[in-house]
Length: 164
Image (cartoon, rainbow, N blue to C red; front, side):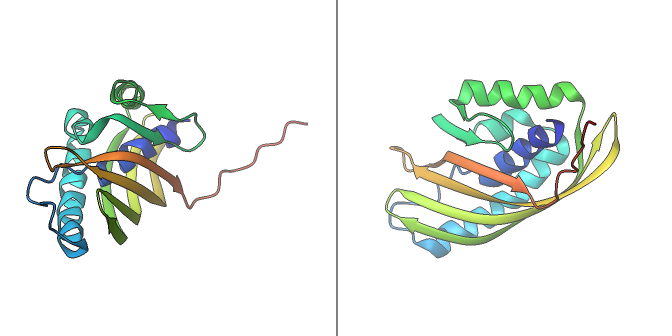
């Protein structure tokens, strides 16, 4: 559970879009340049533990699909989910997001990327995680971009434990 909660923070950070400079006439290259800048800003926010900065980039009715969990619908429930991560005392020590593909179709943009991060989990110590994500962004009426839906998962297999 702790790892999937931490992964929510990763995805939230990666897909945050509030692009006032990406007007309705902009194409994929403009959105990609913005996503690349936001990936760097997201890394910085995660390293500083700035949950509010990450949450601001979701639209009010956003849906987050964390691994090993039910869907989290609405910004207020996403906040509750993110707050539960903070309660574990998990901190990000190193993080890198790499947007791989971006496609824009009207008022929607689709991003697929990968991430790598090292976090400190109080009960475990340092934990390395690598994985992939997909984000759907929606252009808002004020011409900003906000996260509409996100999903992510790790590339690292979960150890199997058998009770005999």
